[in-house]
Length: 326
Image (tube, rainbow, N blue to C red; front, side, top):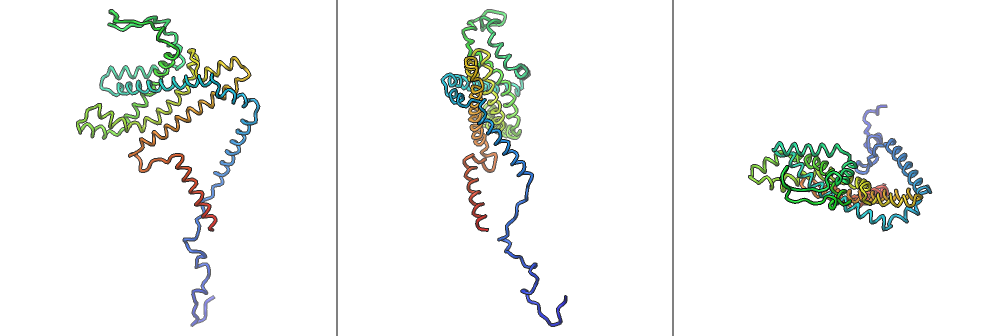
């Protein structure tokens, strides 16, 4: 309806819809509702709760026997052997992998062919076959000698005295690990930008110095996560040394399971938990190693778990204060 001529309309008489009820700074932005995400989260929580409930209440697992066996000297002795085999094999396998990767990248066709053949053969043969073959190696070669091919030997030694159970396990795992580590290291070296190689060569730096101080440190950013993945697989692969008469963690549990057949399930749970602990420790070490080599490659380092907890607690307190002030 139009106003009569000469009538003045004040701002207060204007419709209230033209004036916001709150200042823009006081208005709260409502987040987008995602009912599907909440539904999936609820389903996952229910499944996890059911799994934990079944794990705790099922008498088949015999958690009292699990507690009895978890820190028994027999299990701990096997755990020490597992750690020794894994540590020695990891170091020797990595060193062998570096040498094989350098041979694969060399300009010598003989070295490239020998490295490729080694990697192809060891990745094709199952690890258990390699271990059993080495365990019975003395049946094929009772003595080993070093000398001129098809000529006199400078010295020889009895293979059976050197091939102890520990030596067979470490050598077999190291040979297998070196084949996979070679491809991990080679991929890491190839991931370094070609300009880094060209800049180092333009400065006239020796090849060995270029590799140690320029190429390899940058390649470690790519090598670390892949090789740690291999290392976790190596820790689990140590369970195969039981078949060459070495009583590692799994072998000790198997032996006790044969003596106490009623405790097979809790013994397997003990082995499972110990392997979970070992791989978790390796994963934590991996995080900090990756964080160390990320310096200079990212704008900010990834937060540590403690920093994440602090940030989450700070965000929760800020959210609670914001909700209380509305």
